[in-house]
Length: 509
Ligand code: SF4
Image (cartoon, rainbow, N blue to C red):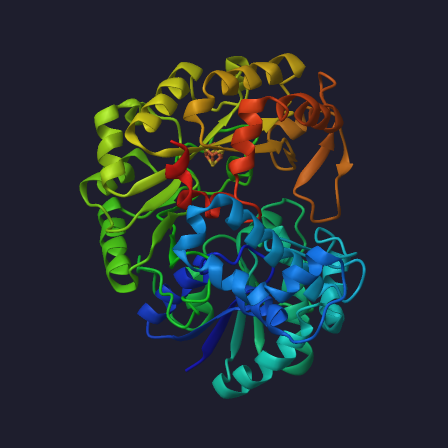
């Protein structure tokens, strides 16, 4: 029977097991197929941190290197999360140690959430070069130490690499190249969110054909089943995390990620890649989700459940209220009338909801309407106040520089935040990127692809002159300098951001 090894490549936040390959494993194993999971991201980072040797540097670097094992251990224990200052120091020191461990060349920059080198991760030629020269990648020593023994012992016929984020692209191709050069008989499959975005472009012409045997866009369950000879529709099994190092992740206890849907039930926001890429909304039935969560939480006893949906549907929120999963949980929601109901939110809190992430984007109603966000500021106001009263932390996302915004509207956003600062626990600030496939890209004068032939965004001329540089200046010189806003921004967990925020949310309510 053909077997498959599914790999989560570096670099991504090492706070929780990778949901994508765990969901695939649930499906494949349910159909009786042999499937192994490898978190190359976590293993590779721990390998680099584990190596002996003195690292010359300044006093901070010396301290960071000396304490790396103690800091990693502290991040796995709840006590550190009672002291935000100590937590911030431990994370920054561990990150510094990782950065030093990976810097075999001056252009290499590895952090707890990102990887960069001189290659462009959005240029297919650079990715193919990373595959041709895996020995230039800082994870090469880990590949040499880990992969030959694993592949010879397990003998997979297939290797699948899940490419979810841009931060993983270069290392994913180095991994593909390593396998291709040494084990040419193994067939290679590439899938994941980033590849799906690339493949949704109308001009996609697979540049990786000589390296990768199959590229899979969208949910991988059915295509993988077909590749492995099971021509039956995928059912909705729970993800299966067996084989992943569940006690090694850098969080205080196990954080279990779970996706109850693909796509988005709203699917209309003008700035968002979901509608632009025409990703179909595919929810799992709430009753099935509730059953999965009960089973998973009973088996793994996680300290936190991370719901990965782009927006948890109102029906699923009701189901979670009625059937609590049995551990604290958090996820992304839309501003919805349901969340302005204090009784409902108190029940949600009682079901374990500790934090909700909400995309507000703008404090200007005109901007919200122009981007078809589908929310009113008056509702957002009530929801934020209600969540605070119910004891649920709010992680609010703002987006600056959209085509309908100017300095006037950006200041309205700042005023909105200042007036509600007590109800906003955490803030994420982003600057607008124009999705290549979006409707607006057709109407605004653009200036070609931003960063390579695989770029997902277009450079564009802002119709009101509110370009990225002007937005950055506003954010740095005005927005972030408002004392209540600065206080919120200081709370954000470095590198882990919203992934660790639920462990702190209660302190700031
Ligand atoms: S609600 Fe979120 S995921 Fe859905 S379309 Fe809007 S921005 Fe995209």
